[in-house]
Length: 368
Image (cartoon, rainbow, N blue to C red):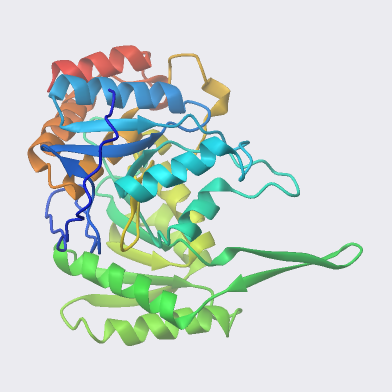
């Protein structure tokens, strides 16, 4: 898919988006996505590990379904330096297009190399991470009746990157919680619940120990909850949340939490419904939106084997299509994925099957 870089000077103002479908999302953009002649331009970053394989699957499905989307692709890696030209070009593309589809970028565990994922979310103020954990018919899981949404604050908390060694062998790592950003993520969570016919929001915290930081998060969320009298809310300590998730996940509907807790809970959620290969996700700001798998695994161990499950990236692209108000295409692709898994029984090894990425992709295309 090639893209002409001719640009119009006028930017469209767009309203809040509302969808009641199974993978629906809510976002208020101050400036809308780029659409010329009925075709949207989307920044594509396949990512590390299985990223190229799953991105190729999405492109094949979009082509077969005649989705009016053209991709500007940037083959970044988590090892790419921040000042690298390709990284700067990718950021410029995201600023221009307002919408991105992204695989998972590996973050090296070494001093002096910051995470592109974290830097991108901070620089573009993509503050709300949304992951949807829901049973898919035909996929064996530890629990049935699971259907909850994790909403995670993306720009502060333990991911603020403020660390220093105060004395040899002594490291101080600062956790940042602010009232304005907590209010923002809390309102996003309650708005999401209201507009998607959800009944309850659970506030996840550790205010019994971190009385100031998590205390501020909890009290701010409680104050926001009063503005939504039709939505039930409760709060739960994060370690108890982990136990409740693996014992009775059906009690959860919408969950809102600081950054690190969201990373942990989304991985638990993936384990409950069959693995990271079927969890879609998205990241929203007021101006930019990036869609990526909800459980952030690079899967470098199966890279290049043609055994990766592309469902999480395909379903993340479904969320993207609904964001772009291309609901018919979104329904068509989502239904095709569900039929491939539940009716045809076409599954990759992570779901207990023996089919390849290529075979799964062809089956989805046949079911469009």
